Amino acid sequence: MTFSARPLVGILLFTSLLAVLIVAFFVEPGRREVTRHDMRHQRDEPGLRLVQLSDLHLHAFGEREKSLVKQVKALRPDLVVLTGDMIDRADALPLLQAFVEDLGPIPLIAVPGNWEHWSGLDFPELRTAIESRQGNQLLLNKQSSFTKGKRTIQLIGLDDFTGGNPDPRLLERIGYLHKEKVTTTVLLQHSPGFFELPEVRRIMGSSRFSLCLSGHTHGGQITIGGWAPSTPRGSGHFVAGFYDIPGCKLYVSRGVGMSIISARLGSRPEIAVFNL
Image (cartoon, rainbow, N blue to C red):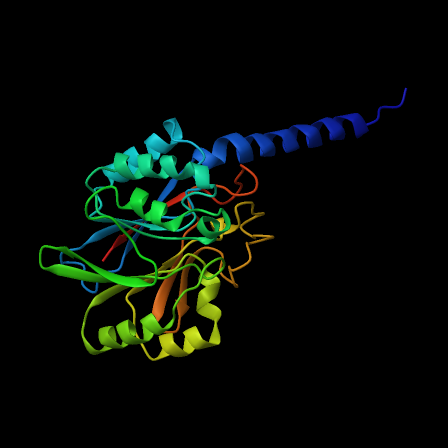
């Protein structure tokens, strides 16, 4: 009798594939990682804690979302920033408002992503949902500031590069101001491919920003050994983490939610914490 290993190999391959699918669809989407980044010039100076949440893609406001809010509150942030793609359907606006209100009195700044544009969302209604709590702001090609004690940071929120109409001229004035005065300046732009535009590189090269924050890429969402086979249009060459770009240190968040398919593999959801 001749023994064939082919059925055993087939079983092992099927089992391995099933295990990968279980991890991608049911395990990794809930395995949020908190990444911490100390951006202070001196370690002994008082910090201002900023938490970045990107790409929420809210489809519900259930236990997973409430757990995320609880996790953010436990980090005791001074400020939360939402860097786009909070929702990807116009009828999900009440979910976003519920999420924002559940964060309580934590000040929040948000900028839109491509899906806020592509979903046909009414932007005045988006502003109402974001600003339902006093002190919250939706920045659409606008500047704002946030103060804690003796510390003040400047925030510039641009419209999304992929789906919207960002105004680079705002950077020229604000970036020059920061270069002349020692000010902490944070630039929010959903799609990191924006920073590859020649005009933007020119403006950024003659300016200076403390930190630039983007999302959009989901860190590839599905990766193989750390390699992302695909990232969305508007990502440029960026995938995740820190990048040195003209005039700024750019951080690209892996984001929290999922798009197109409800799976993650090798790219855990991320809550990014910055001590400024």
